Image (cartoon, rainbow, N blue to C red; front, side, top):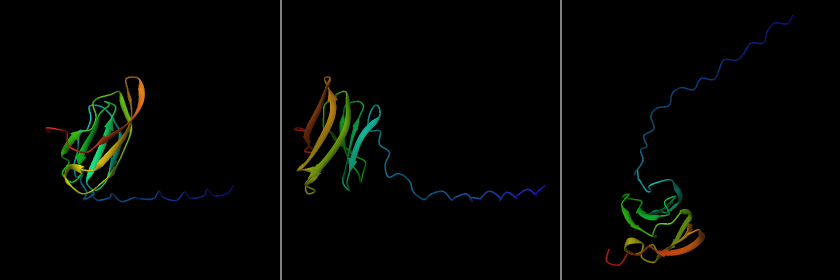
Length: 116
């Protein structure tokens, strides 16, 4: 009878030191799941199962404004436009969501709401 083949020892993975990285911000963005997001160096746009789309500053985590009124669910968000000026002047956001039982595509401005 042949001698048993020795089993190589399991690879030992030494414990890794704690990562020196921490989140820049923790944002409670929506009442339920976040279903869509896009960001660049200045803004973060989130969409959720609560039907809302919200605009945030990425550097500070500060809430800027809500871009939509509520609906049923947001599936996609995307934004583009000018990088100059305050509060995203010149930028627009395209949103695909469900509202009143229909699939809607909406285009919203980053401009602050009147009186706000």
